[in-house]
Image (cartoon, rainbow, N blue to C red; front, side, top):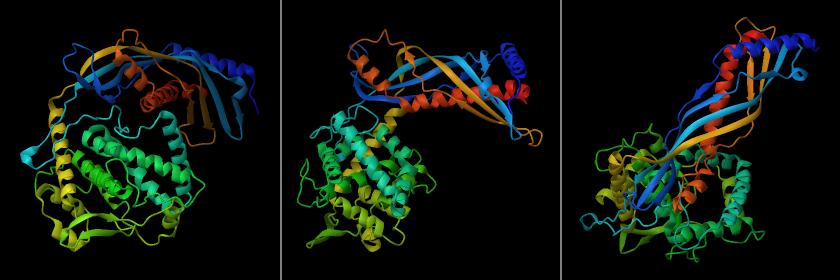
Length: 469
């Protein structure tokens, strides 16, 4: 039954008085430095032509908690519990931002004549890969692809085997994202002169079509650069496997005795990528005149329905890659040996072109990592940012029959809010790039959002709960 208004008015008065007498503004932890844009043309006279752009939020405070009001029509005692609903009319969040830049090198490698000439001209400009040369994917197309991909994911999740596949991906997706952010070799290889974008378009069309007879991975269809679906898919698998383990700062591929740490997140993600697809029976094309020379894998052709049927009907435990197999792939690339061991264990045997790719990726990643040790970011734009958040609700549930010392449940309902960033002093072409990138920093905003919720909850726990119990 609802208590009388006099009781709630007194409670509201005590809460407001207690908060007014105490410091209720709180600080928000500075964010890390996050990548914003890669290989971006810097303003004239900056000191270098292109830079990798990052940003951070710092010195944030949240104030306005001293004006906490009781929502009387939602505050009740019933069934042995007390429900207290409070409202904050307006919170003020203020802070500072810094936009930083690191020199972006251009890499052209031909080490001891053992590697292909390579000019790093297509670093992706965002944290991930774009379509680079060849087929371009428009924002409208990309959104359509994502909608279709979500539908396919939902369908996969309705199958036990599909759930296992998605669980494996979700477990390591943060590591894969880090690899794409840090490794230009990964992004450039993924672009594949536009082949990967063309494959994405074909896969989307095949899975979205009502015609279930469309072959996804036809051996007769060629994409940019003259590659088939399966041959590019294998290169991309190798790309992720090698560049993921190469990103591990504690793994040295130059050491012939180095072994990937089985507990490393990079090792686990690399092995997951290597294991992916092992359940699909493949036939390797072997040159009869040179059994060690393999030109690629033949994978059965699948329609979209065929893929789901195969996944659904698969029984048993999918074979998993081992640390020894991962070591062998690195060995094949770095020393040229390892083919005999791979053949004995039914592992992948790399052809000469694939060995060159492995060497090239490892060389490029090593150069990037070494350069980054001394490539210190410098602030070139900074300013204030702030937000005004209205109608924040705090819901407290107290079990009146609970043991003494039991903490109540506190739920902070924080509306979605935006930051106003002072960018009035930004000029030139780079300003439009930065504004566009900053409009998509949802993850960072969510971190601030979470910290505000936690800060409010802590103050309510320390200053309010003792008054309402």
